[in-house]
Structures are given as C-alpha cells and as structure tokens.
Amino acid sequence: MAKSKEVKTNAMRILDSMKIHYEARTYECKDFVDGVQIADILGLPHEIVYKTLVAQGASKQYYVYVIPIEAELDLKKAARSVGEKSVALLHVKDINAVTGYIRGGCTAIGMKKQYVTRIAQSAQTLEYIIVSGGKLGIQLKLSPDDLRAASAGEFDDITR
Image (tube, rainbow, N blue to C red):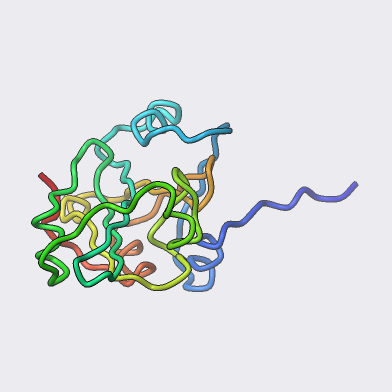
C-alpha cells in the first residue's frame, strides 16, 4: 500500500528550505472563516493567532501586515512604518492576483513577490505564534523570529 504523502504548501516548502522549525495544524474548512473562528476550532488562545493583511500605499506599492486576529490595523501607523503617506487595505477580490493566495489562506511567507512586511510588535513577547499556512485548512505554528526571517519582515507598532 502506498504511503499517503503530506501536502506541502509553498510556505511550508520555503520554511523547510530555510531549515525553520514549524508545526502544521490542519482543520476542515471548505469556505473562508475568520481567524477568531479558526482559533476556536483549533482550541487556541486568540492572542497567539495572527492574521495576514495586504495593503496598497499611495505609491501603489503593496505591503504585508501580520497582526493578532482580534486587533485592528492602524492605517496611519502602518503607512508610517513603511514610509508611505497612506495605505489602504487591498480589496478581497484582488488578494489572489497580488499574493498568489486566497482569502483565509494568505500568509506572509512565499507570496508571488517579496513585499515589505511588518509584524505587530506584540508578537515579539510570544514564544510562538500561529499564522495561515498558505491554504485554507492549514495553520503554521512557529516562532515570531522565524516568521520574521522567512518573510523578510520587521516588527513594528502597527495596531490600534
């Protein structure tokens, strides 16, 4: 009998190639559900689960922000953190074209292009965080520093 092969997302392959330790957690998901519902499904404390948002600056450049699921992105702080006059969140219909990921499966690791990435500074106080694994139904547990390294991101004050 053939061995069932574990499905690897692009994000997981990148982490593997960088020799970054992570744990993949899977759950049943046919349609998008928000991060709070995912945390509840997996029985995880909300403060360790982070969501990935994509915004476009006044310069038309794209930026990636990783923040706690219950937090709100402060657009002024977010713009300031990347040297923009202003940023606006990307419309849901544009997520796939810009990132290569779909809503609910978007992660800062392995997008179509390497965008400037900011991670909420609150992540630095945690031993590990949970982020999307690049596909609906997969979450990744890794250290905040490893997420920073894999996404070429920086920690900053970007939430309200």
